[in-house]
Length: 130
Image (tube, rainbow, N blue to C red; front, side):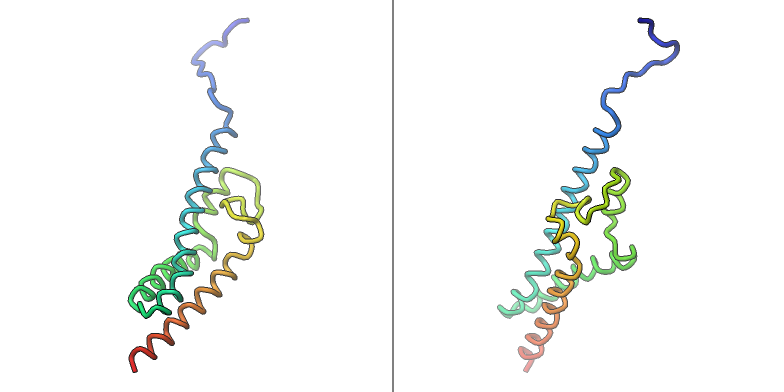
């Protein structure tokens, strides 16, 4: 068998293997970021309940930054757009290691918990100021 003329660079990995590795890395990063924000959201009412209003305020502010980022990206995480470049899969959890039902309802579930937590923190703050 004769080698082709000119520069010949053997392909070490098919492109889909490289894409799979990048997609997995994005999914891991997205899952870690999600867990940090979910933890903050769950900690807001807990901190408030224990009277740590400063911590509750900081946690709410951190999550608010995420809300602004989502709002500026048409309620889509920038990591979702990045992951979409590496797959044609569009299930609710194609970009994150979460059960599909949770990925599908994530914003409603954690948005509600966030709003209730912030309202609870506000009530505790007002009552503590009396």
